[in-house]
Image (cartoon, rainbow, N blue to C red; front, side, top):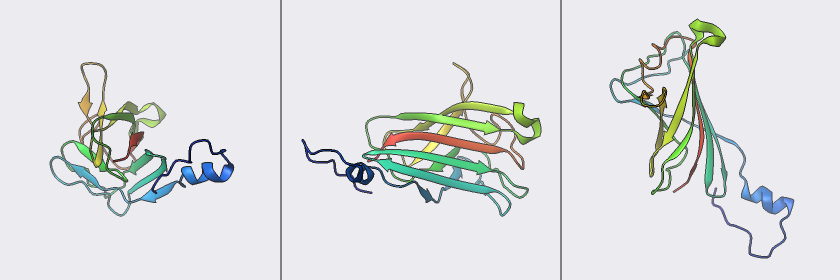
Length: 156
């Protein structure tokens, strides 16, 4: 959605604010890995949603593995709804759930949108021990496991 700010001095109304904020929209997320290609399969799910407010895009991605999800190999990346602006990296959140461990089985980290990037990747772990989200980090993935990525970035 193209953004046009209201003219200077114009009184802000509900209609103007509504025009500045688009509706949340679904988008098709592409999931890739640096090694072998992962696949959601027919029993898993991968969804993405976003909203653009001015030049800022807020996004959410959720992957839930199913019985025939192929987790691939290597570090993971997920497509964004639009390319990020050049010049600055943006950081969001990553949450990984391990279904075999119940409610105690989760890991957190950051979601990184690099300057000018069309994808988001994630890093799990503490200071000086962070590692890229992959088929083997922070766990070996299986059916029912989940990955959530959320964040905001400036659109190109």
